[in-house]
Amino acid sequence: MVADNPSRVGRTRINDPEEKVTARFPSGTLARIKAALAPKEPQSEFLRQAVERELSRRAEGEDQA
Image (cartoon, rainbow, N blue to C red; front, side, top):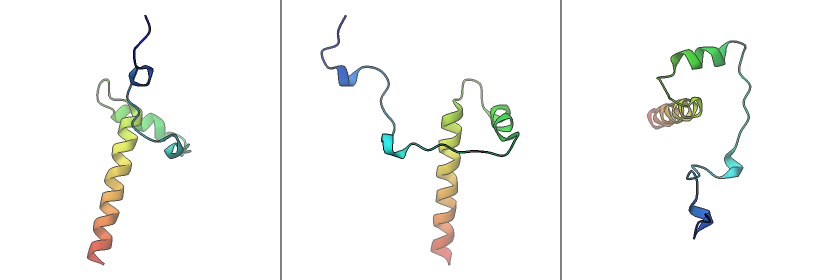
């Protein structure tokens, strides 16, 4: 079976490929993250949310300075 519109097949892209990043963490960090995940919660979603929270926190700090 071939889709009528192949660009709409599969998961929706959540970001631009140019926004891709590789990060290195201190030993044990990924194990701590995995232990903190909710059942079926993707590690990538946890990391995205953590980054967004930190960016918001820092932006609020700039407003107060």
